Length: 411
Image (cartoon, rainbow, N blue to C red; front, side):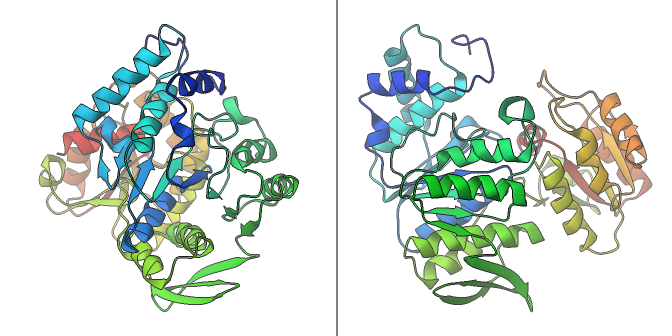
């Protein structure tokens, strides 16, 4: 962390320098699937990975942020990178970098690329950290496939203050002649993505034009120009995961994968802190009659998806425990949830200097129409809620950093 004073500083110059010093591992990767977007990147990647592995392929995967351990970011030939190899990769990157400035995300991305280049696999899945055009992952000249999940307002201080500008940054991963799968988009965002694909002669496969996906009779139905698939619903919960599943299926079909891969994508994907039911651990044990759920979504688009899922989960009263960062659209996050929750208990996120205070989070919730209270911790909030309503449905939400703390403290 001492190598660069800023948490975010979007440029590729430092990446090109360290990759050259490492003899360009980005040129020696197994075929790359590069994934950008505002929401659904991780879930889509998890389903593509499950599909590829279900078809017998060995995959690398790079995701961020991690939840409980840094090692979660680097999945090497199907398994989380081990401590000794991670240390070795970071040591080599530090030596290659010397005393030059470099960000935390850049040097750890370089370490991941180095590990991927030196370990045999069939595919490499790279998730963009932030944006796309200037993201540290955007260093592969010719990926096998690019994917853009739904684009919405987020990180405006870095990516721009309109959907068109943000979409332009995400579309920066598109490469000349490389197919690009595009999830559902707002019209102005889609226009920017389509224009970039046209400029680069990149075949585009867009939701609602080239492929469709929907739920029918408890199953998932996917249709593209090559035919129709009738599949189990994805293991990841929520109506929004139907569309994420469609993106993953479109990607697998464009890569020429068959029905076995598509079914595995639906049935084998695992992605923590995306409407995850917590069933064991100290937190759950303290509230044995309650349902305890965890979600790391943190912007209005995610809140709308969470609200839609909660609305369809039955009449059990829902209470929120929420902690957010002060860089997020807190008001926009609260508004959809006010219609489906009875109360919100606000907490500060432990160990995060950018946490919104519990007081400010509670104030934003009240402004959205949610009865809100402050709590010293998630455990304290859980105890208060279950004292009043032992069989409550409780959703801990608002930040992936809060979700990571919960996964650690809950074992």
